[in-house]
Amino acid sequence: MEVSEICPVCNFETETIIHCLISCGLARDCWQRLGVPVISPGERGFIEWLEKIVGCDLEVQVEEVVVVLWHLWFNRNKIIWRNENGSATGIIGAARNCLTAWREAQVQTGEWGGRPHLEEKWVKP
Ligand SMILES: [Zn+2]
Image 1 (spheres, rainbow, N blue to C red):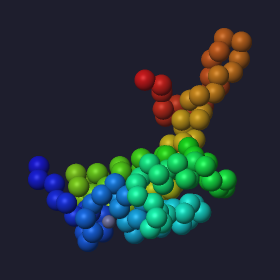
Image 2 (image 1 turned 180 degrees about the vertical axis):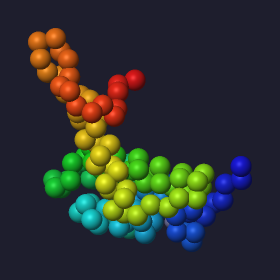
Image 3 (image 1 turned 90 degrees about the vertical axis):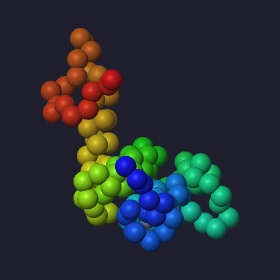
Image 4 (image 1 turned 120 degrees about the horizontal axis):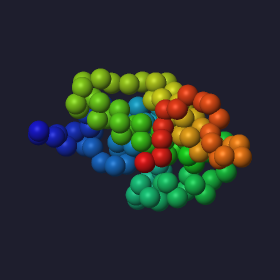
């Protein structure tokens, strides 16, 4: 499959990791809703941005930032493979559901170490 260098989400800018995950309109909309600052001109790379986010005392948790990053990438792939585009609301909602399911899968309770009877959506590999 031939992959274009142009971002499939906005169909306008060259797709880079920073554009795709931070500064593209849809990503920017997600970060704005979560109160996460987008990349500033002085920052050169994705890791630098992520380190700043981790170091900031933001209302949003680092786990939520990571799971939103994953869903932005998943949305980008859905556009390429299935021609389905998501909204910021949909991406944040799906990310939060995923994070809740992951957190529930981490819970170990009871004397046998079994999990409570929660609907299981995510299992450790
Ligand atoms: Zn874009």
